[in-house]
Image (cartoon, rainbow, N blue to C red; front, top):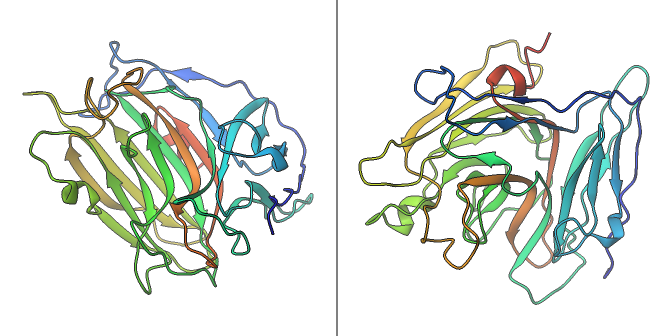
Length: 311
């Protein structure tokens, strides 16, 4: 197979809602921070809404060329590279149930000479600010029957500041038997900090194959500056349908993100980032990988983005 698979377009009843902008809270005490940039609200793969993947067969290395998600009056850009299928909608919707997912797959029948495979959706570039709380919530599923990851791991979510390595994210753990383990990572440019430090996961969470898991992450990005405050990453988990309450699996203060004239040198610098999610990994010939997402929300508070406790 040498062409990208055409993604199916599935629809449901359209619910229009305004995209809101709210003031963020500080990392330390959740009080208002009038000096911080506002945090925009994004929502993707929300049950009961109409989802549509546009220009699926044109999805390529130019972000936004195709494979774009249109939902609730907003466009989210797609990107494809290497041995992948474009972002697609799987599952079905009816008046009584909604089993749809935003699905990202590699294609084992495509061969290429490149180093990377990616199939992703993204928020607008530079829309999410440093120096304040940015909350990300989502449901995620990794099906049974996928292959183990080799190399540096497979990112299913990235915090992207510039063309350097992502400043944070979620990846599938590399190595035999780890195909359903998620790891939470970050990266910065603090002097004297080794590459090995940034490559080490802060926390690992095994997923039950084929079942949905909910996550909420708080990112407060603070690049290194002498005597400056550190950033904060917190992660909560809850298995979908479980009777137990959410569990905090990570809380870490650390510098992360790139400061001026460092890893982003030569590019336009901005203290902001975008979120990409789907699949981004080293090319593995003949291997199959997949991640499914729904209820992807980004905003200024935990209550706004969490996939559970929404009644």
